[in-house]
Length: 229
Image (cartoon, rainbow, N blue to C red; front, side):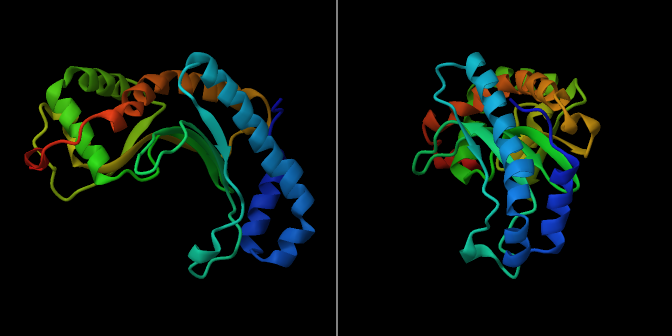
């Protein structure tokens, strides 16, 4: 059971940020395992069981990130990440985008939410086509999102919308290349005990209707080219 991150967790994250080399990591590997990776696994497992109890037939899995960067993509950076995260999602299929619930811890703060890492243009085209067919469900979800303060919609936008939105409240979705619905915060005391567990459970309860909406999007038919405006 997750009992909290520790001061050593934070010290390790800052340490690897400024000493991103094999010798430092090997000397501090036990701290990484016990104070960073293991608590993240425990937190992910607990939240996974909670979400799975809410969606028992969704085929969800929990994935905890590795600290090792892909050697093919270092681009002058050190071989280790200074952050870790877990995701709760359906297994990926070739050529399919799957939304995920996530939590991430960095030396500077933490975040959690729901969305895509990067979604393909066809996925967002399917979203626009679904909204065009029936805008009311997404209008309702967007009003619900706009009516609270924990989460915000974050998007990477096209310079111009791909198509005209059915209503003003839906315009952000028509500009988005991809998106997330998330919350970011500086390091807070709740990370060092059970408080973060309850915070994430409450947040995931709010996010699950959004996850449900997007989890089925991959099965929608590809829209005709004219829908791309």
